[in-house]
Image (cartoon, rainbow, N blue to C red):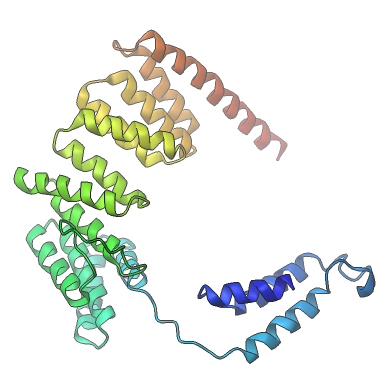
Length: 312
């Protein structure tokens, strides 16, 4: 019964139900040593091969449904193509692919290619061209709402708007943009964070927008709150370190970098940053207490790692 209910839930949620067959096959392979040691009528669960047969029969009886790829999928695939090779030759080859895609059929594919062209232009520092390509991509798909325009309707799942928004913010917050554009980027970042509160990328862009516009105290408060909510996110600690550096808070800067390195697995780098934080002239008694505690913890982790390597 659990298998049948799971099959219904997966199908109703839009997942490919053939994945259940692959899962049971892996489970059968993992338990083959003892799977046949007991008669089927004494088992609490049916034999795995029986479960596979039951699901396969249900799949054959279920009408096939076309599941078109979401706009998010097309956009992320275009982004991956750009990021996989950011050399001049790599970007040129990817641009050729996108131009061919734009000339083809399929509006989603064309919009994704235009989005990719915008990303390439941004990587080349061609900000005006990047904005033009992004406008073309967004105008063709016409998502439900735009940043800066109030809409009571919730964002459409998979409509690509959060991906478009993130690139629009990247363009406005690029280093060569005039101050007026950067200020507009801060306003749009605030609206974007309110509209997509679960987007980790947009949350970091909002913090970066505050830093770019010199709102350092606000950025520090926001990032400290974010760090408490998402303790395992190294990039948040990096941004907090960047904020502290701009404020001239050396001890806190190195403390944040230590946390970032530790989360990324660089324990020795983290210990080096803690040593620098200890030497900072602005380290308070409270900061030194935190440094001592973190040093003991990280050193213990380092010794444990060395012990595990020796045992291997």
